[in-house]
Image 1: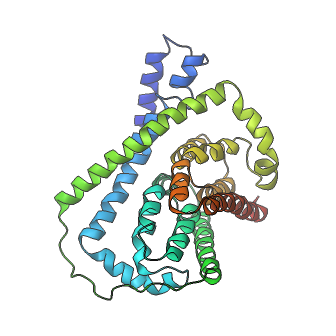
Image 2 (image 1 turned 90 degrees about the horizontal axis):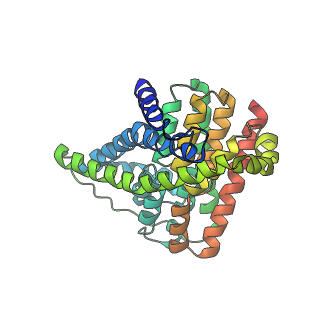
Image 3 (image 1 turned 45 degrees about the vertical axis):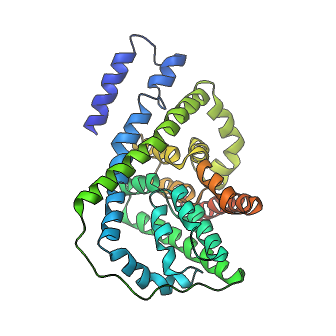
Length: 330
């Protein structure tokens, strides 16, 4: 993007007289993962516009009373995976922020439904940052790869829910059959809510990106990524058949999914991945472990053992599904 190139040229040109790009402070400020390069570009240039668009659409559906109708329509298919139509709100919230969605899932009627929703949200629902990257990559990937991605993730979502519904004892709660009348949404209120949530997103993601970029820059400066690549090489290069630097993305995603998504988009733009490799990486990142904040909510809402099992299960499942996909494509 011309705006990105213009900004990078300006900020690097401004800082370079004070710090060499390859120096310690130069690496932290204007390096590949710098707080003046990566952080503002991905926060304001990529994630914020798409996240705000998602929030606007969600509020539009709720304010016009379309959401309760969607819940009623989806009640039957959701029951096949152990959920009722009431769970549509947490699932929808998951496409904005999985952490917030997990809090919302804690309000569902039964412990069984809360557990199933939490597992599905933690493993098979991409957060807003990942949705933003998926949307951006849809212009770069062939349509057959995009269809395969959605097919695999939906299959994992459905099969996981189906198995949990089969194995966990208990009944699925019923939902209210009454639906409110459709109404004209108040665009003023929707815009205010969207703006407030967009600011909340920046307040939540901004400090994480700032601290994360410092941590990543330090890892990069002291060759930490190189050592981690060596440890993970049997998985990333062997089992998944991905470039070694894909290891960086998995490390970033453990801290915050936004960081992994942003790093992935940057690597794709730099030509680091072929189209089949993009697909495999996208699948692994989508199904990968919950970020740190989501994991803390899981510990709060579920038992510690359950939260740990969800983390381990998502770690193994993501690499297993990615590896199977890789066998057929790479």
